[in-house]
Length: 105
Picture 1 (cartoon, rainbow, N blue to C red):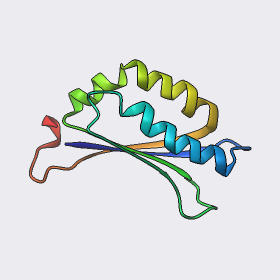
Picture 2: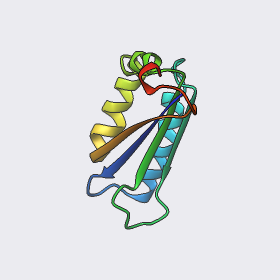
Picture 3: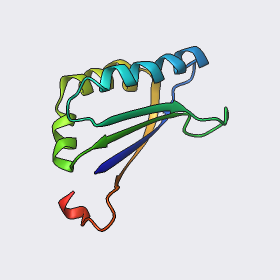
Picture 4: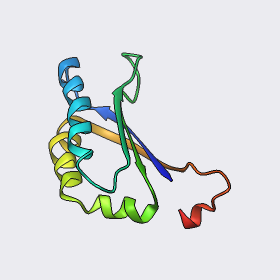
């Protein structure tokens, strides 16, 4: 199983209320994609954190992850949430199954 961690810096002017809506919208938009096994999103507990917005996605395989990246819901999320309200991102992919060769994830 592949777990993707995405950390985002916010654009100036993004309020707490808007951040809260981003968290809710992320879950509702991305759970519609069949290749996604789980969606987690949230805000950093430290109000001065460098990366205040988090999205975590689970996929069965990297192939399912690539299919997801072509899905219209992902592109809509990128357009409506990410490009509007974030300034930078850090995306990390992890293999969750112990002993599994990441080349075959």
